[in-house]
View 1 (cartoon, rainbow, N blue to C red):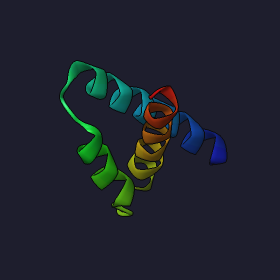
View 2: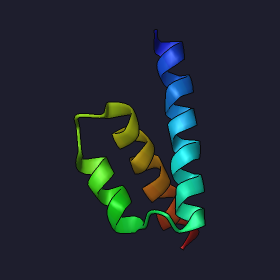
View 3: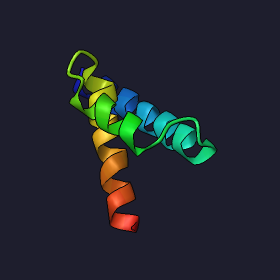
View 4: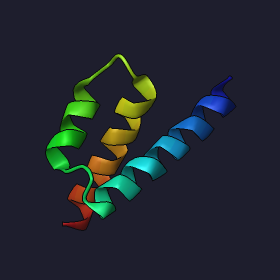
Length: 57
């Protein structure tokens, strides 16, 4: 199960990165997703994308 969760998390991270680069979502949207605990995969992925954005800035 842990293996599947990691794969889904990686897929969700990729989706969020793509949406961010296309301008479909912004930092505020990612922050809201990271705070929302109902979708744990999306929250985890949003946190990773936010961390990457902060590191690159």
